[in-house]
Amino acid sequence: MRRTTAGWGSGLLGVLIFSGALPATRLAVAGFAPLFLTAARAVIAASLGGLLLWALREKRPARGDLAALALVSLGVVVGFPQLTALALRQIAAAQSVVFVGMLPLATALFGVLRGGERPRPAFWLFSLLGSAAVAGFALGQGGAAGAGPSLLMLGAILLCGLGYAEGAALSRRLGGWQVISWALLLALPAMAPLALATWPERWDGVGPGAWGGLAYVSVFSMLIGFLFWYRGLALGSIAGVGQLQLLQPFLGLALAALLVGEPVSGTMFAASAVVVLCVAGARRFA
Image 1 (cartoon, rainbow, N blue to C red):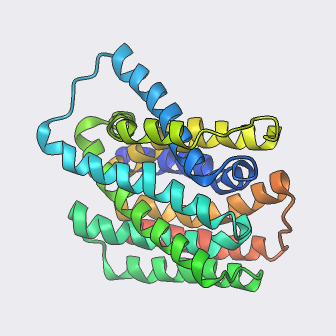
Image 2: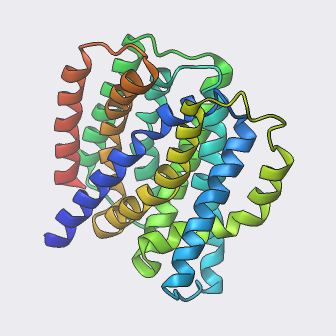
Image 3: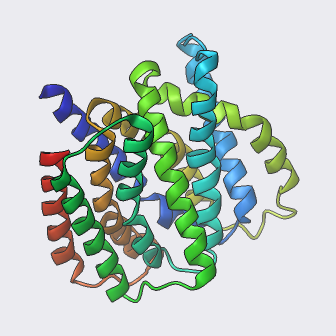
């Protein structure tokens, strides 16, 4: 029980950190091209993760872990950041909430397919209700997006769910921060040349908001958040702890209102209460 409780607590800290990712990305793409932003955040985070691995003299992952680490890199280092950066140049951060509401379902699905978990039927009921509450709230706030941004966000959610589930399974053997650090290093040979190739010609037009967004997604969204998130998924369960992501859209909307000035309806509180109940139910039957 203590292990499970610690997992949920660690997962909640991860969600709190991830909640700032979309508003920060929205700020960052105002000054940086999406390709450069994706590459730069990965290079910065890989440098920090590599220093941690070197300083603590962590052993290298086994050869059999490389395929799983490649999937983590594809999902959370390359796929999700790039696709969301492209989408958020066309839609507001608040509009992306409807898609983020699908992330717990995607994580749970890949937890079953890749992690061997078997939640009880009632879990899926609460998961679907929570996702429906998030999607309904977002659509009620005018969160419908065009076909292009919708496909980008849908692809981002699927890749992210795969990366979460794959990384959680690896974390049980390698440790949470080690997994994301090795995944970042695995992507570095591709991300570093991409960062140089998309290097901005001028920097004087980049405002402080864009710099702050880049710093946040590089240090917190790309590295520190995963220290808590993968630990939570490994200690608890991929499907169960993954339902905490249902809270992320509402936290993200609050941050979007504070940082980007996007309007947030008062009905957010009622929808948040429904989501909290669904998360509690999912935790019970995960």
